[in-house]
Structures are given as structure tokens and as C-alpha cells.
Amino acid sequence: MDFKLLNNTPLYRAFSEIGKRIFLPDGIFYWSGRAKKEAELVGTIGSAFGYERDFIDDGEDKWVPCYLKEIKKYTNLNIEKIVPYASIGGLPELRKIWKDWIIQKAGFNSDEDKNKKIYLKKFITDPLVTAGVTNGIYLICSLFLNRGDKIILPNKRWGNYDNIIVKNIGAQIESFEFFHNKKINLEALRNAIKEIDKTQEKIIIILNFPNNPTGYVPTKQEAQELINLLQQLQLEMKKPFIILVDDAYEPYIYNFQEDILDTSIFYQLQQLEEDIIPIKLDGITKELLFYGGRIGFVTLGLKPNWIQDDNLLSALKNEINNKLEGFNRSSISNANHFYQTVAIKLFQEVGRKRIIESRDKVKILLEKRCKKINEELMKIKSLDISIDPNSGGFFIFLNLNPNKIKATEFADYLLTQHKVGVIPMENPRENINGIRIAYSSINLDQIPEFIERIKKALSNF
Ligand SMILES: Cc1ncc(COP(=O)(O)O)c(C=O)c1O
Image 1 (tube, rainbow, N blue to C red):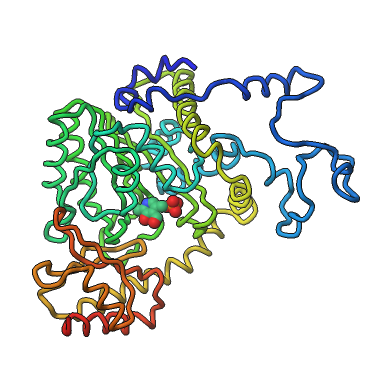
Image 2 (cartoon, helix red, strand yellow; image 1 turned 180 degrees about the horizontal axis):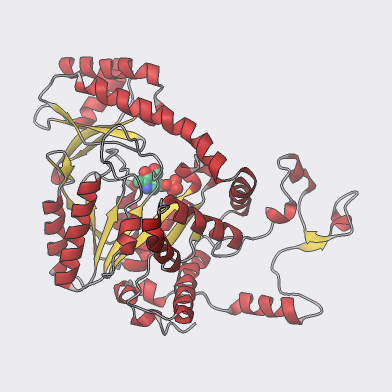
């Protein structure tokens, strides 16, 4: 494929060597597609097909993908919806459903937001289906990061980013101190961006709200200040800013605190005219509480100043899609068909309204726990601990005074002496020493006891 349009965008300039190199060759798909339309006898499909009657007792006179009859014991889904390969970029139906879902999640419902909604619809790509959000993060990091390139992340972050970026890809993390006075530390972020600007022709940042491990979600004002900062720096530097928006926990935003940003920051970034290019990484794993389903999505926000003409815009989307499918084809080949079908059924047969209603039951549980654990932790009067700002997700982070309490030793002490399990995070180089508590897995009535034991441990440690 020729990337005539993509080659002239700032997106392409930001690509890694792999990003520039990768594409999905026509090969098998070209010939299978043609055969479907033109051939009388088709010998192109690389999976076993046959008349059902020839391999299943009492099978029908139907030409179907061959399958083991025992499989039917475990599902009543149509065999043709689970057995064959799914398309490389994901089932078209699911990609469309998820695009509509992304548009719904923006909450652009008022008359005032009408144009924003039109703009959103027009300037995002069709979501690519990946094997969970992790796979999407890996794909996008590979698309932009060469060995040795730098990407900006807060010091408190999901540990698997380090595995993907540093250990797997061989790139580097420019870490910034996440909070100052219980707010996002925009000065530290500014410094990190300025540092990268000295050596790199692209600025790449991951934002993850609600955050793992802190549960932090910005207030609307903090989000606006963050956006202002990005706009100001992009204007000065005139380089593409690629913003990976890890929306794994997107719906779990608890509104017991005022002014919290209650939609993904992707939506505000997508509306910006500057080359601040947001990439949305989300999925059914946490959003639909279907972790083992391993279905994630990658969606890019595009800019009108790259291309105005509608036909060219759709050609550009095709070029981007070809690159992303090239990644899928050369890594996972395609995502799980069974769970894509389940997701389609959920949306088509259950519907968005009931999905949200069912999930809200869980969200309410989590919100109550979040409120409770904050209240209980606040009761501990100690100068050796502090809680990071939090109003969403699955976790809360308790900072410990590094001069007195080493997080790993404390976690071990908590476990052995008080039978309480938490995740310690200790990294003096990045100024981290604390424990992550996953209240997602603690029932409300156990929270007071859980925190009481932490309190006891703190006084005896
Ligand atoms: C911040 C963050 N991003 C992504 C993921 C991975 O999501 P998935 O299970 O869809 O791969 C997690 C899972 O823990 C996470 O905490």
C-alpha cells in the first residue's frame, strides 16, 4: 500500500522505524477477496470447511467451517460466529458498535455540543480490535517508540508500562512527579516535556485517568490547565504531541467530589486544532467487567488541518488502518472471535442502556468502597502517611514516610503479622514509597477492619 496521505501528516513524522515500515500486504486477502467475487471454485481460505453432514452425525447439508461437535456443549452461539478467524482489524460490526459507543461516552448531547459531536464522528478512526488494552498499549508504543526514544509518564503509574516500554521495546520513560499539593504537578510535566524537546522531534505522553495505582481523576479545572499547558508547549515547539489516553477504567469515576472530570480527557484533546494527537485505548475488559474476554480497542483522533476533503479523509483512515492491521497481523493475527461475538450480542440484544444499568450496580459498590476507604484512612492521624487524590478506578495509594517505613518491608509485615495483603511500590529514584490498596476486591463491611489493621501495623512497625 502507498501511504501518500499519511506520509504528509505529523503522525507519520512521529512514527518509529517499525511504524514507518509496517503495513498489511495484500497477499492472501487480496486473492481471497477476488476469489469470493470472481471464482467458481474457491481454494483460497486457509481453514477447514466442509458439508456439516460429512463430519457431524445428523449434520445439515450446509457448507460450514469444520468444528468439533463437542464444542456445542459449551455454547449456544452460532458456530459460524465463533469458529472462523475474525477479521484482522476486528469484526466490522463490533468496530462500528464501539465507534458509536465512543461517541456516546463523550456525552455531547446538548444542542451546544452538536458540532463537537459531528467533529468527533468525522475525525476519529474506526476502532481497531486488539487483544485487550495491554495489547493496544504495546501496539501504539511500538508504532511511535524506537529503542532509546523517550515517553513521558507520571512516577505513579501502572507497572506494566515499564515492562512494555523499557524491557520489551527498549525505549525510556521520562518520569515526572505526579502530584503537588494534591493536584496534578503541571510544572513537573512541563519540565519533562521541555527535557524531551531538547533531543526528540516528537513528544509522547501517556495519560491514565482514573489512574492505576492512585485512583486520581483530574478536576475539570485541572484538566483545562493540563490542556492549556499542552497547547502552549505544542505551539512553541511545533512538534507532534502524541497523547496516549489509557481509558481502561473510564466509566469508574465517582462523583462524591465536586468538579471531577467525568468523561475521558480524550474528548477534549480530540477537539483541539493543534497537532496534539490523542489515541484512545479502551476495552471491554474493565469497562464491561469482562477481563478474560481480552478485547480492547485503539482509536486515533485526527486533525482537520491535515486533510479537509471527505474522500481524502477516508483514504487517510484506510492508510492508518492498514498500518494498524499490519501490527495485528504480525503479532496476534486477529482478536478472539468468540468474545467479539459476545460483545456484539451484548450491545445488539441487551443494549447500551441495560449494559450501563447492570454495570452501575458494580459502580455503586465501588463508589461506596472508595468513599469509605478514604474516610477510614483519614481517621489515621499520622505524619508518616498521606493519601493521593483519588475519585475513581479500583485503587487508592497510601504514601509512607521513606525515612521510617520501607514500603516493601511494611507490606511484608502487614501480610505476616496482620494477614493483610497490599501491593508495595518502592522506587527511591522516582520518589515513590507506598502501598496500593485495591478496594475493588474488598467488601464494604471489611474496609474498617482492613484499615484498622493498617493503623495497628503502622503504630507497631
Ligand atoms: C492502567 C491500566 N491500563 C491497562 C490495563 C490492562 O487492561 P487489559 O486487561 O484490557 O489488558 C490495566 C490493567 O490492570 C491498567 O491498570
